[in-house]
Image (cartoon, rainbow, N blue to C red; front, side, top):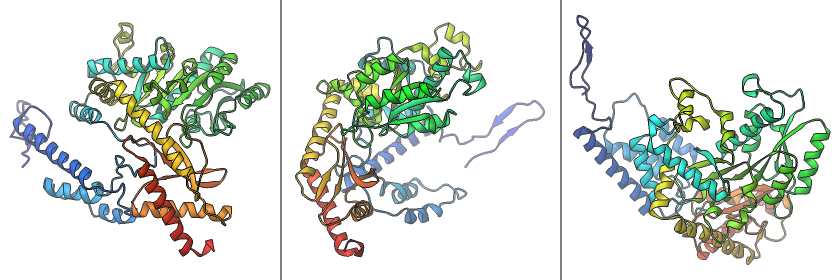
Length: 511
């Protein structure tokens, strides 16, 4: 029972009658006992999730779960731990998508390594905020060390940067620096104070037609508009066409606009393709444009002794996005934004007297908030630090290389079947394909593949993704699990084919 807090108006002394504070995490015995018991219960539930899940999804419909959630009333008195975890099982754990199972092969969700989970437990309990030194101390140095390691692997001599929530935030930072650097260097204009100015021409950014949606989203958020982003065609391997890129840049100059930068993709979301980084670097240098590489997907190549060469040319870039929670087997979220020239981060610095006064920077105090869009920021770097220290980068790299090898195996499995068509060659982790039996027209194939994925998701046997290419519907494998096998791929393809054949028998539109 919670006792009342009262104030003695006569002497203004505040006293307290045994207020129950045992739910606060501290050194009190009751608090420690609750913490241990709660963590043990949580661990048991996680282990139950691992042991009892045989397929990646339950197949539950969102309407069904919504009815359960709607019954919850937070005004009710707190209930027992046992009942709460039963409720959690019913709403969440029974239906959470199991990324660790080999038949989950849909999106860019990797299984996670145990050191990352250990780090998650520590950082959540200590709850450091990685914005200022006086809130994080050694945590700041750990983050900076990992940013430096990543930058050195990219090929930046003196890198800097911050951990972010993900590739979208990192790409937003890149477009922000791209914009502000242009205004500062080329027009001597303070965009931070006065806002976007188009008097001397509209700002233009270039990326491939297969680039991530966050490029256009960032342009919109920064006041440039989605039309500021020029999509460049790709070749047959889904890589940016550099001749088309240079032509587009020249056209914008002729039209009186202001090209400011190019975003190259190292690992497109659908095809895993890597734009020709070396050639793009030459073009951006020629026209003095900011060069950003979105390596949210392909950043894992930095771990690979065998395949790192695929990123040749990334060292020419001004900034890079890396998602550790995609290809470094880290828990969400864990991402990085790295710049070649540290001084460029000054463009986003803002000093608040209560938090990071300019005197701190002048004194060399390392405050990560000086170079971050976030103020309060999780200590996600701890997870990667423990992974490197407990596993080593070589072992982590071997996990990554295994996923690349498995992607080639999966591609062979698709190509060896006459009832499937593979769209793209095996590049990194992504394979786009479709179920394509004979005697169906384009519209029927599109409808059939939509229905196959929908029916598969509703039975939960496996989870695959879907996408479109030139208006046609395709299925997609994303292979980030080193425990997968050829047998898994063959079984998933057989399930897809079986569902397809059933639909052909049942659905009249295919007759």
